[in-house]
Structure formats: C-alpha cells, structure tokens
Image (cartoon, rainbow, N blue to C red; front, top):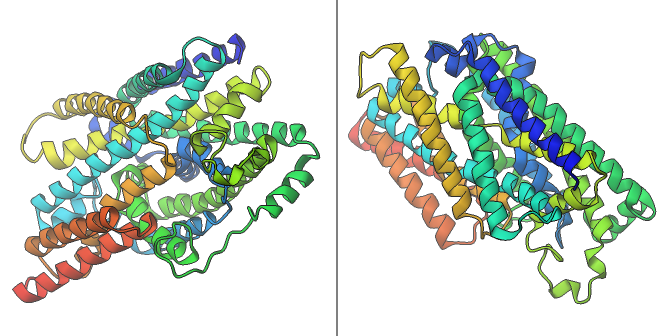
Length: 489
C-alpha cells in the first residue's frame, strides 16, 4: 500500500468522527440519543440492519470459509434460517415492541416476570455483546495491521495491538458524540461503501486470475466449492441443512427478536409495519451479500492456488496463511492498485463502525441503573449513558487484545458466543409468551438453559448452530415444568 491509501483510510476515519460530531448537536435527551426521535425511514433502518448484522466479520471471514481447504457454500444454509426467522419476527414479535413506549426489549420481561428477570437478561446481553464486538474489533485491527506491515512501518502483534486500540478509540468517540442517529446513518453509507469495495476487489481478482472467472469456476467445481446443501443428520457438523434452517432460525429469532442491539433499530422508526418492512428487506440483501462474499472466497482460492503447494492436503486448512481470516486482508493490502486498496480498507473500517456501545449504554441505564438510582433528571441519565459508552468501548478493546492469538474463524467465535447467551434469553421470552410461569420459573429456566448449553459447548462436539436451539428450548421446557409444579401463572 502507498501513502495515498493511508490518506484515504485516515480521511474516512476523520469523516466518521465528524459525522458523530455533526449528529451530536442534537443529542440532548436520552430519547434522541437512543432512538433518534423515532424519525428514521424504514429503508435506512433496513440498511442499518444489514450493516449491523454482517459488518467486518462478513467482509473478512466469509471469503475465508470458501477459500479454506474443504470449504464450500454450505454456510448459506445458515442464511436460509436467517430469512425464515425474519418472517416469524415480523408477524409475531414486532407488534409487541410498539404496544407501549419501550426503552429496551428487556422491559417486556419485567411486565411478565418482574425487574430481577429483566436485569438478568440485560446483564447477559451486555456480557455477550462485549465479547462478540471485541472479536469484530480484532478483525478490523488485523486488516489495519496488514496495512502497517505492507508499508514496513510496524508488524506482528505490535501492529495488531496498536490497531485494536486506535480503531476502538475512534469507535468510542464517534458513538459517544452522535448516539444511535449517527450510527444508523453512517451504517447506511458504510453499506454502500463496503459492498462497492467488495465488488471492486472481485473485479480485480477476476482480471488477475489466469483464465478469469471461467477458470476460477472450473477450479472451484473440481474442489467441490459450490456445494451448498448438506442433509447429513450430524449435529457435530457446523453447516448442514438442519443446523442451518433450525439453528439459523433460532439464532436470528434471538439476535433480531430479543437482542437490544437489533431491536433498538426497529424502535428508531415510528410503527411496526415500517420496522417489519426494514427487517424483511434486509433478509434479501443479506442472502445476496453472503453469496457474493463466498464467491470472493472462490476467486481468492483461484488467485493464490494453495492446492499447488507441496503436501497441500497435510498443511493447515488456510495454507499458506495461518488463519482463513487473513486471506482477504492480504490480497487487499498487497495486491490491489493504489487508491483502490485504501478504499477497500476504508470499507472494512466502515463495517467496523456498527457500534454496539449505544445499545449497551441504553440497556445498562434503562434496565440496570435507573431502577436503582431513581427519580434523577434526564440529563443525569444521558451523562451516565455517555460514561457507559466509554467504559464498554474500553472493555471491547480489552477483549480484542485478549483474543489476538486465536486461529479459528472469527465468524465462528462471534456467532458461537452469541449462540451461548442468546438461547436462554430467547427461551425466557418464549416462556413469557406462553402466559405461564412467574419469576421462579424464569430464573430456573434461564439457569438450566445456560448450564445445559455451556455443558454442550465445552463438553461435546455439537456444532454452534445448535446452541441457541438447545439453550432456548431447555429454558422454555424447564421453566414450563417449574410453573406447572408451582402452579405459577
């Protein structure tokens, strides 16, 4: 990369901070800071959902899935579940969000089970989101570190550490000033930037591969990379039709239906119909986007030709790279033309700006802080929200630094963490909608769900798409049994 690329990247980061400052002029109430006055159009919410859901992990990890030895398109089976869940949420979950003025989705649990259950669910969300977005921050830092290395400025773990801290600070400042309004509108822009950047990279790849796209397709076909359906009844395999449709559906019902990170975006519009349109439209875009990023992985395989390496079958699955997440960043920083390389890296940074810090702050203040510190002014709660934004950002930086040595796909890490926590939370929401059970049933169900899914995750080889299914159904069944035995209802 050249200094022109660095200038483009820095200009983007400055623009993001500038956007935060511009929107920050209006962030004088908690309602504005967390919900943008409920004035955001549905199409912008839809773009924000896509950007939030995919972001850096899609840009980096998904191409690596298709590139890796034995990799193919079976990841798409998970996306089938994503789409099905959107239909369920739109028709059955969405109306509940707008029946009364909510600050967070967890307030629905207080209506059914009381403040303690709400506080537990909110705490689990804060913990899970901090870990998952620390992974996202690390992925973006890997790209910036590759930029430093390509320019011989600094390399290795020092570059990654510095990148995690630098990007994390930009994210904190941007979110601190601009609130959810800045996040949503910057996400609209970032979606266009990183899709455009991915298309540009794909075009360059196709141009530089001997024989072009036809040769890449032929090579990928010979290695069975276009296989996308696997009907095996094997719970230890990550990407099967059953794990995708069932596990992907439950995961998305939890992340898009009971997770404040996504639900907060629905609450930025004024009615359930608009929120449902945004969510359904995002499903179409997400499916097409995943197909595109997997195809980039095919092009990367044809470009690097790892299959020609001696003893390829015995090397690491991402050979010649340590991890599959490093393949696309290497191409971007070493092989794209000057200027375009900087634009694509800026696109990756754009994807990283889907900050969860505002959602964490909203959840902490509404569900954990204000029930204890009552009857304070709105300005007081706004100031606390900004303090929590900074603290949460620092914790995400710490997570990114702690996970630097991992070698598995960051996509699997992030989704695996989300699946562990979101399952029991989804389960207690389902229990609430059965109209049976009280606090004892909810607490016992959540405890059983967490214990079961943790035992499965760390004591068996069952794949992560099943974690949400196991956690949510265990919570629902155990909670229902407790309600029956105690005659709660």
